[in-house]
Amino acid sequence: MKLILLGPPGAGKGTQAKMLTDYFSIPQISTGEILRTAVKEGTELGVKAKVYMDSGGLVPDEIVIGIVAERLQEPDCQNGFILDGFPRTVAQADALQTNLAEMDKTLDRVISLDVDEEALVERLTGRRTCKDCGRGYHVKYDPPAADEVCDACGGQLFQREDDCEQTIRKRLEVYSSQTTPLINYYRQSGLLTEIDGMQPIAAVQAQMLSTLQAN
Ligand code: AP5
Ligand code: MG
Ligand code: ZN
Image (cartoon, rainbow, N blue to C red; front, side, top):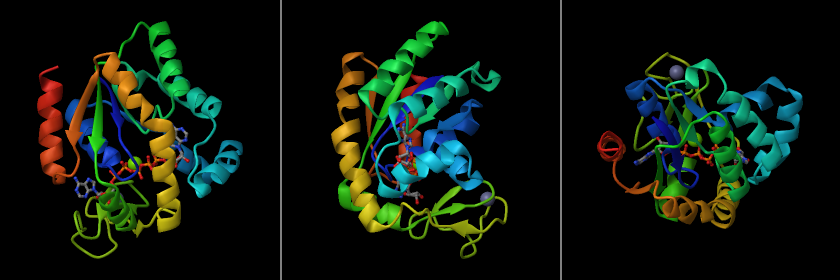
């Protein structure tokens, strides 16, 4: 299964990708997570990316295209992958197509999650993430059993730095100007399935699985 999850910040890409990873035993490739790890480790990539991420803008195409091209060569991508947060521009989508063609691979499906702007802001301001295993929570929609503690591993939960309202609004603007053209891009190639992301997490998951199993 070679899959792209498309959708604005807070649409539920990460939440759904984690579940699909378990279900299909294929890796989740989140460019956001790869970049956040680089920022945390203070690598050259991290130092460069931080400026863009803090402002809610996109990291330059050539950087993320290179990251994904390398990641797709890893042996765990042999049977498929879930791209979460990539591509985000037409240039990234074109580069992905070229890279996959060079590997004799083609995409199976692109799922786009649709969510209203105010719901996105509420989701992102209430999001919490485990610092150890990366599992995501929401204070209202998907709370941990004990406050600020991960159910899965007991790790401490934290709030992402770019999840303050001002940066969230900027990220939403950037999505609408730079990434929404990809909806038509993949519609034209016949790969797009749109799912109503306003449904509860489990309902979105069920719809995704039935779409993918029918593929
Ligand atoms: P990235 O990490 O990809 O962030 P994003 O796209 O802004 O998306 P999010 O991770 O915020 O949202 P999500 O859809 O994963 O939602 P989640 O499942 O967590 O990118 C961060 C930054 O890195 C970018 O701004 C950019 O600077 C840079 N970057 C990354 N990729 C790049 C690229 N390709 N090119 C250039 N720059 C790049 O859910 C959110 C919350 O809602 C959670 O609390 C969850 O519990 C809750 N929730 C989920 N689903 C539901 C539901 N159905 N109902 C109720 N609550 C729900
Ligand atoms: Mg995410
Ligand atoms: Zn955890």
